[in-house]
Length: 99
Image (cartoon, rainbow, N blue to C red; front, side, top):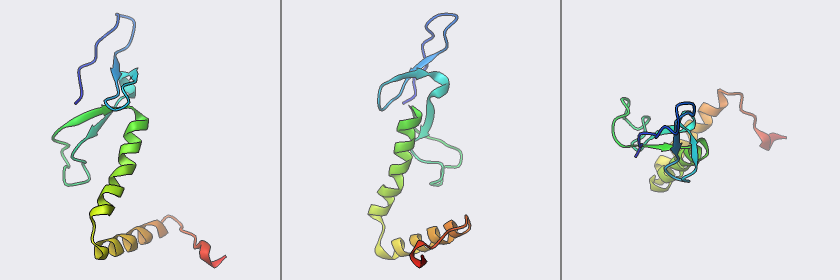
């Protein structure tokens, strides 16, 4: 859960701890993570949020697809692969198997 930062002195900026690694960062470097991700039908970003440093936030977002993959049926996985391949081709995909 995001906590209100404590100001050290009048000249120092606010400091916050990352909720995961517990390291202290300038408040501006702490990112808000929505526990119910916005891309999962939470457009308004309601619900629990945690403050994370950039490294922890990135790790968490790279983990979400793995969680979803593990609960998908084989049919869903096949559809997902086709959609990702199609989407990736729009970015100039190269078929390395034809080298």
